[in-house]
Image (cartoon, rainbow, N blue to C red):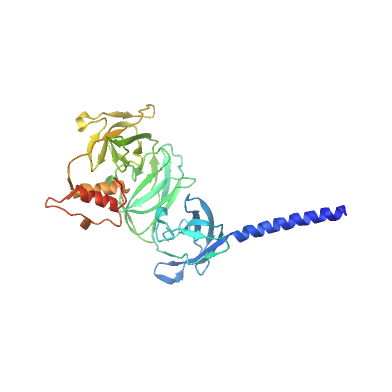
Length: 370
């Protein structure tokens, strides 16, 4: 009798484990689709990686590989995802997120439910050029997870990737002309353009051709000093989207966040700082309105400079040069022109200037709050 009870106890345990595993499997859903060459539904792309990232954290969750007919199916827990199609390192196809974008920020959300299949998550990929290289510090140590970006000559972001464990990177872009930039958002390396300049317009221009690889474009980064502060109005209200400049041999800049704070990583040197916004008076640090009265700050790894803050005063000027408006828009949107922005949105006067109210309206259109 005791033997029978023990035997049945083990049977119950085994049955419970089997049911638990079956239940866990049943809880998953499936993402499926096909991948073709752009404009060629009869040209499937096989052996392509389809990678699923958590929509909110960008953490890797699951992946699959396309079959000879370009199809794929990925079993995955319920949730919201960004789905990414990527060739191997030396592949010619330009990676993209579902939603026809190379930028994770604009990826379309794919929602998966228990026991259901989300179909037609399809991709049409274009062949492009491949740029490769390494990212090192000044002692030739590899730097991982540095973001390498390609901008066209007008400052529009056209592609990006991140360096890997040994510092190497593989960047796929359409054929064209580019300038490259390397930066880290959470580490104190100074943002730099290729080849060893801090200025976009002084950066080397790459001419790349579709189907061609370009190698040995390496970055050597220096550890910078983090400078931070807050920009407010006269009533101590935080000011967002103010450009904070650091002037030395080269110009560096950052923009303030919604709480008025900013951070900028600078190479050691002596700097003048300034804050610029269209509806506030241009101000140098510390409470100066011309460079002759600005305070020069020595930035060094061994010096704690504290917070560099600005308190700005509203200005009465109402007209601005259109070139200045366009430059400010590009700075605040990370060099990129907004797809909803067009020159004919401005009502220019006879001096090629634009009214303050029109400036604020355009800023609102492209999602910049003032």
